[in-house]
Image 1 (cartoon, rainbow, N blue to C red):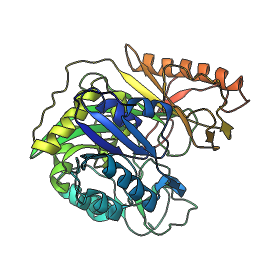
Image 2: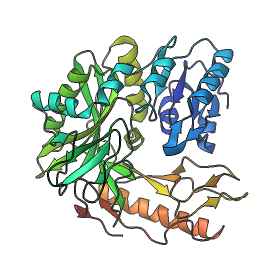
Image 3: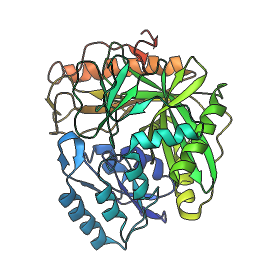
Image 4: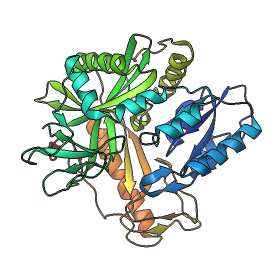
Length: 396
């Protein structure tokens, strides 16, 4: 879709580019390459291409490179904003950055994140609260997680008991408490906290795949500790522009950093000022300017990634609710366990947001049930998830 405005164009490359395109669109003209080319992504973008996916939702390098050749034939090299998908592909990111202006942290940062044991030790030396992180198996696996270096999204995380580590795996001690994500922007030696979001998932879920989050309103007492961690992380890694990190709130007071993403993250979706955050990311990368001030108040917002309970082909004539995003088009086949769509809601407080997400899930369940059966589980309850599950429950 061509918008025909004077907005400067830029290229988004991500596993899913919809949220980045939506945040960019008010001030920039997004061109998008991603793995899904969903209906709403195509509507947001001036141009949109679907690149091929390898197992585990990895980019097929040759096909992505071919599509970048197509982009080069349409315009002079565009600035590039990346989303998820490059964590385990630093060589591909190096290739992408060659001859193009990469709006974000350089590829060397991603290579550093692939060495988590050394990185977490360096952060601890800077005073950041982190879990014990080791390369080899602990004496007893109880209370430990196995994680895969240079991965994101949580699907690679397993509880250590009864598991055998694979290549690239490392061990991290589990921390009790609710899980959160912080979204930040770094410019030079200055860092701004754009927001903090609390992780949610369907009640009873026992894995670690990312399901969603709700933005935290106001300024909790532990936000200063989050800001100090953000400063240390940005300094240690030399981060540029937007980045995020996940933490467990131990004892209700201490943020313990468990994961770092040197890019705009999925939680960008849950902030009402996401266009300003995106613009601040571009300004930080382009001019090293910290052009962001967190608003004193904003409505809580949340999103929930809905995964298909079984394979389903989107029928012709199916109408998605207006409060959904990442909508696959008619004829698209969604595999069992694959992301189906994202629900988005706002509310007066966090509880109201969760209640609205549940109501919208119920509506989606009714619509899909009328077009092909049990695509989704029949009911949903949400809970906060973190280092240990069942941290705090929410009811319908």
